[in-house]
View (cartoon, one colour):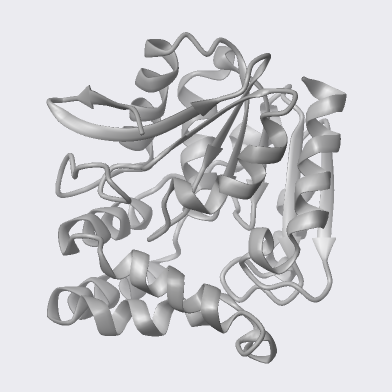
Length: 263
């Protein structure tokens, strides 16, 4: 896979297909590999770009805190380097936070954005406290944390169905350096509320939500869905936080339809 240097550190990425650009941003403890199936399909008609965010996959850590803005700067540096032009951007979970930070810093680079099991709100003080407790756990025993965290992204009733994929995700996440996990947690803890950005943006927005998602519960997100002037929403009734695994056909088709309409 190709790489480039940012602040003298290595960032891993992929760039496949031709045409107008779609950028796919993975979530916390994930890597660009989660997008392999989507990229294969989307690249038949579009140029598809993925990357390992700092501290994830095969990309180096950049700092003790990977703020959403810092990670958005890395994405921008990549897109500028490979001359991707204006693009559609989709972010899963933490990748959605990065997508919103990118939209705030570089709105002229975007044609639209997708928040994939993600949202625009900052951590509450209670949630920030949970981040601190999680950081303490990771510093003590990273693997035990990952082994508990990953299955919790799926509804309990599908654990058996996706057991092999869950184990694969655990193994990939366990290879992350502890510093990368902590830097991302620190960055999410201090992220800004992006409600005003969604309210004021002229960009079309696609929301993909899971009704059984404990990390981005639908009941909390009705306010967000109503914010953009132009938006579409897919709510997956039987889905948790991992729609690209739990409902790959539905979520891919939603992104394809959105891209065709706005790109």
